[in-house]
Image 1: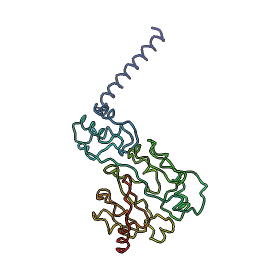
Image 2: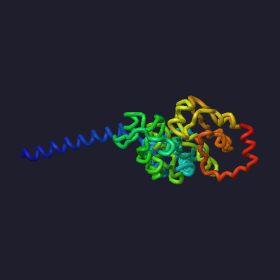
Image 3: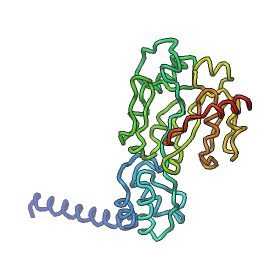
Image 4: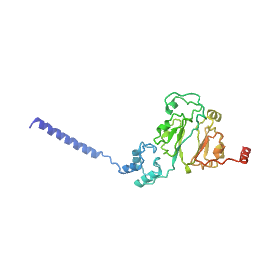
Length: 288
């Protein structure tokens, strides 16, 4: 028998033996994957935005299949429709989560918050926040460099060149939370859209005392607590010189908006207020 033939037979035998060993190992260590994971992933919007708290739709689908209770899990992009479809696939009950939307808790535009210096570093809020307190007297406000806009995958934000602040396009916002995570000053918050998309919130995060806050920004919350006193639903708390409105308790009565001396409380998507009569103005002045 020639050397070449012996070599071919030997290599063939070794290859066959290796194939048998690999097949046996694959069978022994084979990981079973629930076929419902693919079905759930197909039902998800494939945004891979991380708004669900998982690093992508595939990971979220796996978590949904493995969870005994999915009522605490939610896809903000797909919303109730998507979660109902997932619940149908898994035979589980999904919670009816209220639609959320991002809001900007800073109204310190160029008009309200004068610049004291000119930043010339990298155009990144994260970098600027690591270096100094900002171009104005308010160290809590928006840097205006657009990290939130870059983080948004749904074209739901843009920078307003006149105000220097980001603008949220409500119809495009899916409440994924990417802008919230991107903001180093924590001035973007996810809140319930509210009935008829109406909501009320304090557009300020300045915790300085009243005089200092007002000096830095004309529309800052000064912690006067007038809003807290007038709220009939205990929806407002004032801590560290800053008011906050609990959207679960707020009944949208707008009484807090009327008494805020700095217009720090914003009302969104409400009809225009009726102009007050002279008699009503007199009554208000007398009460004050």
